[in-house]
Structures are given as C-alpha cells and as structure tokens.
Image 1 (cartoon, rainbow, N blue to C red):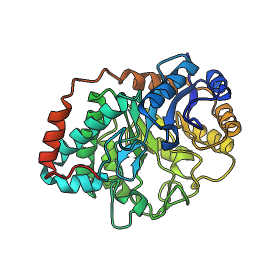
Image 2 (tube, one colour):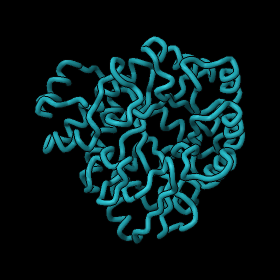
Image 3 (cartoon, rainbow, N blue to C red):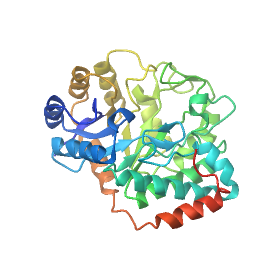
Length: 335
C-alpha cells in the first residue's frame, strides 16, 4: 500500500462523515492532534480509532507534546511540564537522566490515549538572538550538549513505544522571527552553521523521522525557505546525513507564502517525503492531499522504515520514575 504524502488533522473531537470519506480516499501517511481535538481520554482514544479505521491500518498519529508552552495535552489527561530549557537547567548535571525520565513519562501518557508519535526532540541550538517563541523549547546553547539531551529524549520515546520526530532541520536556533508569523532569515556563514547549528542534527541523523524549518539560510539558498529548497534538502541528506522520513513543518504557517496546494507541490519537489498541513477547512485539505500526491518509492521506503521503528513499550514503574525525577529536579518537576 502506497501512502499519501501528507500528515493531516481533524476539525473537531471526532471525524465527520466527510472527513472519514476523504481520509479513506487520500490515505495520508498519518495524522496530528491539536488541543481542539482533545476533550477526554475516551474521546481521544475514539478519535485515534476513527483515524485508523478511516485509512484501514495502524497509521502513525503524532502530536506536539514538548512540555511547557507547547503541549496539546494538559491536566488531567497529562502532567503540566516545565519548559524544556527550564527542566534542563534545574536538573543540572543530571539533565540527561532527567530528560529521559520526563519524556518516558510523556510517552506513557501518549500511548495510553492511542498516540504513537511525538514531535520531539528539539535539536535546535539556542543562542543570544533566538526568538522567544523557541528559546525555552531548546535544550541549551552547546551543540554537543543539545545532541546528548536530544538522544536521551529520543530513546525515552522509543522505549515508550512512541516514534520521535526530530525538529527543526537544519536548525532553527538563529531565527529572530517567529516562523508561525513571518519568514526568518539566517545570514550566518556556512562554516559557522555547520560547526554549531547543524552539528546537533548530525549527531542525531539516525533517528527515524525529522521535521524541516521554514527558514531562509542565505549562505546556501537566499531565495527559498529550507522546506521548499532542494539545496537545503540536499544539505540535510548529505551534509547532516539524515536519511529518515523527512516531513515539513506545517505549511499553513505564515513563513510560507502562496496557495497551500502550491506550497505542497514545492515541498515535495524540494525533496520532503511528507507534507504536514494543519488548521484548514476540508476543501483546502483535499487540495493539498491532491497536490502532494502519493509517496515516491524512496519516501515509501523511508516511511516503512520509520513505522518499523515503533515497538511495544517497555514496562515502566510510574511511581519509581516520578520519584527519581523529583529527586533529580530538587522537587520541582512540573510547571
């Protein structure tokens, strides 16, 4: 079965008849959940069942559950976490173990609701100019440390039966604008980017899935954001060495200009395997799914490899994990 080259969302708490029919025909690779899709545990599980029933398979269902500002699940369905950078700083020398435990608990929360992927770890390296929308979502300002923490986060997800999605390739840390609203431009020279920003992603290039950044990197392609730049996709594949499934960030973000279906075509043409498209009416989702089309053979291979990385979660003693994390964090674990 060849997958549609999209990851899509739902308008509400359950799929409408029209959405079910559309998803059955379009067969998107997977789905993503937002806060508007979540009301209760039973309802969220039922919606995940709706998605899988519509496409007739155990498809990937992902979410943004970083903790801090970016977490779609909140109490009582999930713990309210500190922002990642605050968590790392509070844990100090124990940060790797503390991040592993944090995301192992998050993975357990997700799996309990039928969600088997998370858009984390964040491999972006923070710096003095990092925009506030991203700064405290980062794990630090040193590429080697960010890579070590990113590895701990990824392993926690995999051990919990949840597929991690590394973001945002090739590095969002130097953006001085919020790509949800504007197109950031990075003017740093190539050598500087490769030594700092790209290095964290090189160390994590074996992960099964990753997400692009809607940034212009002037040293490589002064015209096109990375998501729609063949030059940047080549850099991601060859310089960074990432050979997993490459998905775009949400193409409805304001950093990208034009009709969604045209952006979808440009994203696939640039070399992304999957287009992520969110927060749009059904007619626009239809147009994007048609424009993205079906995965080519290389994308399909990477998609199957990513799905094969999902595994049954290992046993987890919740109380022991919480107790250990609290000890590492000096008692302040949650936001």
